[in-house]
Structures are given as structure tokens and as C-alpha cells.
Image (cartoon, rainbow, N blue to C red):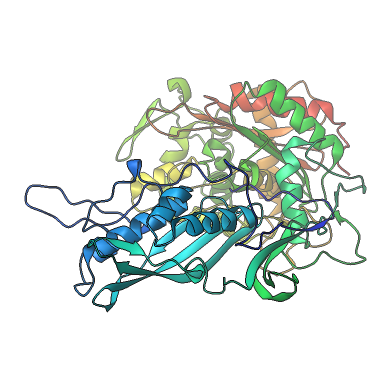
Length: 574
């Protein structure tokens, strides 16, 4: 997932400008780094061919080989030396080497001053300048069109097109024929550009009771608060305007950044977040996460309202709702539902659990465990992979995935209030993939959000689309689901309860209330340690957690969820 833009306090400011170009700048403000120039070099004799894009930036030592770039072929009418000089000028400009860029022009001093002031005055960082094919305008002149992408700090990217005129000098070299218009077609001696910021669009976000939410109090919610505020019309805004150099009068807007003006008179954005659950989740990840990347979601089964979203580390990627993980054996809740719906198995059916089972490749159980003569319910509570895989022929290739979508909403387009990954269970490509899918591996993907929802559906019988915004569940009508039959729900609840009292989630057994759970251990690769999972429910609340590299759900994820459930009363979250 990608970081959110910070909100700004209410203030409207204009960047200071100078009459010579745009705003002046102090020494050292120019960008120091940029990506190396990328282009295509034609194959020559024994040399290998080099391929790269036409984006121009810094190059070590400022050395450029003739014949590189989009000018190396298909531009017979232009001089390769002119193309090389144009490319070098753009690279120096992009890298912030304004003196070097100026020296490649017919007016070094003016060019250096203008380029330096133009970049600083508009708060542009690390521009990307991409050249197009050069064309000869005459015997001694060449034109190189280019696209400028100017990232404006905290706002977005200003993109425009311009052209470099190059003229051959008396000594046979080429220089950029300096003019203000090459920096931008509308830059001239009477007009310049001005950056105006408007940070008045901040929209407050509250918890379910109306108390303010902030990343300072709940670090994991910082990106969530920013996303919700921005969606409501908040976040930083700004414009780049063409103005008269003397009067400052605006002559037009060249670029606009940010969302539409903030909502008027509608108040703050109220969420479904419960402060008790959120605080417990943050604390549990910090104390029991052992410094590993981890995430947790808690939600109400009867409404889908999300009570807590927590990540460790708290900044950056929101793995709780946007992560894409193999859910491992927590997915056996879905597989079990598919088997029960088809009457392919009953909890008391004997389904042997050997150490190994080969279906294209060898599958095994955690710690090579085996349970000869085990019932299906025992296979569930002890999370026996080989037993579940042995039942693969009881289901059609698409059947488990269809059940996931029809009854659990997996793979449908959820609308939780912020971007989310809503799970995937595509048809397997072969029998090995089908075997893997039976135990939540292969192409099956989820995250704490989806697995908390799966648990909520299994315990309540009905899928309710998760949401962070009360009263706005699935406003686009993009999700539909069929309730699970009562007998299936009763059997799922009984097996999840037995997993706590007698199975792999025994670490939750001391908690008050009718706690049910399913643990999971998901393979990542042969080299990387397994991820640990647990999905649990109590009192109408579903919780799911993943710990990257946690080795097993019992050892890593269960202690986290235990602390969360212990911290919040059994009747909490209402």
C-alpha cells in the first residue's frame, strides 16, 4: 500500500518569486541525486547492447556517449552530437547541476539563474525530463521536444511539454539556444509562475463515539485517518498559476492539486473504530509482536463494523486491510464449509491424518504430526493438512472458491471506506494447486480483514461487508451473499470451540466467554520462515491476526489475540 499525504493547517500561502525567473533560492536547495540516464545504445561489434528508457537525470561525471538515446536511430536528419548535448543538458537540469546545465547553453549565467530559481520557487524536487526524437530545423539547428514531470512537494506532479532549440557553434560544437520559453512555453520576461498552497481542507476523523482519532494517540490509524479525511475532501491542495511579474495578477491556472474543497457544514468523519479495541490491538502488537511485521483487525459480526485496525510497524503499508497473504489453515473454515454444504463429510467421519501426502509434491503437517484414525472434527482442531488434502476429490475444482464468494463475500468488491484487498480464491490450475488451496496455500490470498470477516460469517451465519463508516455499508451494492445453513454454522462453531479447548488454539482457553478459533501456519517459501495466523470470535466480535515469520499461529498470533480479548470485556464493542 502507499503512504498518505499529510494534512496541512488552514493557511494559504504563495511562494516568493523574483523578477528574473521564479522564486530565488539559497545555495544547496537543488536536488543532489536523480536516477541515471536511461536510453538505448546500438549494438557495435563486440560490445553488448544497453537498453534503458529516455528519462533523463544525473549521470556520473556528466559524461555522455554519442549515439545514445532516442536519437541514435530514426533521426538521420539531426546531428548525433546535438542529441547528446540536449540529453546532457536535461540530465544536468534534472539532477540539480544548474551551473553545468547553464554551461551547455548560449547564455550560461542567465540559464543557471533561471533554472535554479524556477525549481526552488515552485518547490519542485527531482524533476524527470524525458526527451522525444530530435528533428533538424535547418543546417545548423536541431529541436528536441521533451516532457517535464515536476513533483511539487506534498501536492503532486506538474506535467507539461516543451522543446529544446540547439544551435551549432562556430567551433563545430552544439549548445542549447537559451530562451526562457524552453523551461516552460509560457515563461517569458513579463510572466512567471507562482505556487499557492491551501491547507484549509483538513477534515477531522472521530471514533464511533465522536471522540477525535489521531495517529498520535493510535499510531496504526495515522494512514487510515489521512485516507478517510482525504476521501471526504480534506488533505493538502494547491495551484500553480501564471502571473504578471510586476503586478502579481493571475493570468491562469497551469496545474491544480488535491481533492475538491472540504465538506461544508457536515462535520467530522465518524468511523466505526472502538477506542477500547483499538488501544488493546496497538498494545498487544507492541508487547507480543516480538518486533516482527504483524497486523490485526477486529470487527462486529452482526454489522461488519470494523472496531480496530492495527499494524506493526504502525507507519507505512496497511497490511491489515491491504496485505496479500496465504491465509494458511485459517482458510480451513471456508474449506470445511464447502465440505459440510455438500454433505461430503461430517464432524464424526473418520479422515486419517498421516505425516505426508503427495499430490504432485509432498505435503506434510506442522512438525510432521500424524493422527491415525482421527475424525474430521479432530483434523480441524489439530489443523491436519494431509486429512484436508485427502478430501480434495470431494469438491469440484471451482467449488471451494465458489463457496468463498457466495457465502463469505471473498473476491467481491468491498467498500470499507479506504482501499482494501478483499481476498482471492481463483480456480486451481492443476491437482497440486487444488491440494494447496484446500489448506489456504497456492493461489488463495487474504489478510486480517478478510479472515476476520470469514470468522464473523462462520460464527454468525451471514456475511456482512466490513466497513469503517457506519451506515454506509456497501452503498454501491457491489456485494451479495447467501446465509450459511444453521446446521453448518452450528458445526463450525463447535469445531472452532474445540480448537480452543482441545486443539491448536489452547492458548485462548483461559479467556472468559465462548471463544472459538482457528489457527494457521502459512508457508512463504522454502527459505523464509512461515507466517503465523489465528482467527477467533467471542461475543459477536471476530478478530484475525497475522505475524510475518511467526513460524506458527499457536506460537506467534495466538498470544497477540489473547491479549486483545483479555483487555476488552466480553461484552465490549457494542
